[in-house]
Length: 196
Image (cartoon, rainbow, N blue to C red; front, side, top):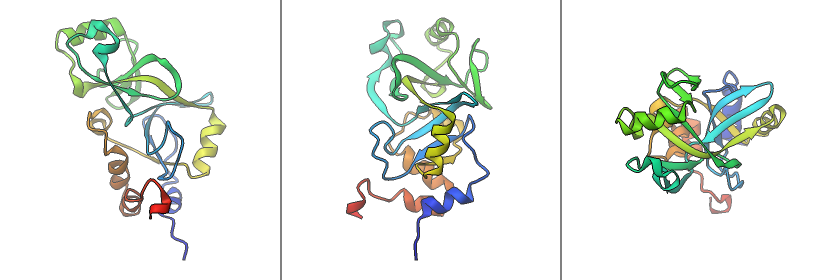
């Protein structure tokens, strides 16, 4: 009997689509160096394509090492994806930050960077409110649709706390386990299928 829980659950979750606010969870044996065992938050999804940020790829660089203006704010910086890796982006829960783009209830991306700096200096924002990324992940509409159809990604949801957590080492496994029993099995697969 052919048991492929990853394949089965794609069918079971057909009501979830690649909408902004949802997450893409990489299939367990994906070898792409950017997306291997990644969880990607979709921040835009429309007729022009999709944009997202890899939530669990820390660069082991602190924000204050990149931008001296943030001398006292030692937030971790993550690799958001392979597109524009020289540009800094951020997601946060600050609804009153001008020019921020809403992703979902209580979650936004980018905004007024100068105002953000002043809020951080005044202590109005801490690490639990924000996440910084170098680069982003991007797909043309057909490209992402084809990858999902080829079962490269599961689509799920995560709460705001899970998205903004600094503890991302187990996020891929945790995101799968939160989806149910079949995905919990997937979370135990070795990275190299030959080791199974």
